[in-house]
Amino acid sequence: MNALNWCLKQKRGLKLIESNSNLAEAYLKKAEEAMVTMNEISDTSWKISTAYYTMYFSLYSLLQKIGIKSEIHKCTILFAQSYLSDYFSDEELQFLEQAMEQRVENQYYTNVNTDRDFYQRIFKEAPKFYVKCKNLISCFTYKEIQHIRNLLNKH
Image (cartoon, rainbow, N blue to C red; front, side, top):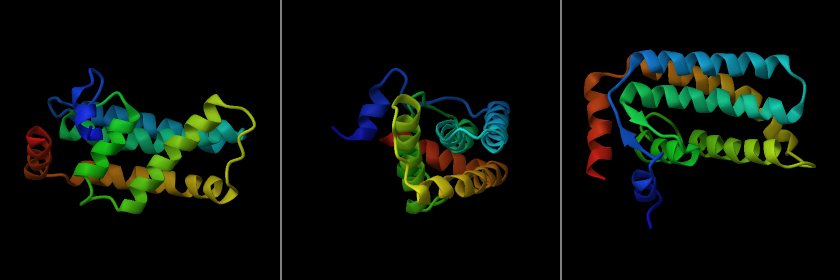
């Protein structure tokens, strides 16, 4: 079964909701808080988790602006890969997916050896991803939002 179809059928999967600028701002604030924490802590596992959540909450704030709800991280990322590819590069979205996988590995398992290059890259990419999402939220037009919603609705 198509992964996007699966996400649309899940109770906590992808759902069209009303666009909500207040929730978009609230999730941006959560992203900012995760970024601050990322910079203040020293534990590798938690740094990776907070870097990932900086990126994830940034993306989720964008979904709130569009009017999309998703409580499954994989579905949120799949939505971005399917419907936001005009705004994000494949590399950015693949890195977000890799960050999610590393977050899970580091949060739930012991003795995880995270690649040093990835470890250094995530701390550089998380703030950039946040800024990009924040800019998109402020620049998205009603027409763009409706186009994305219509594409999902037709799926």
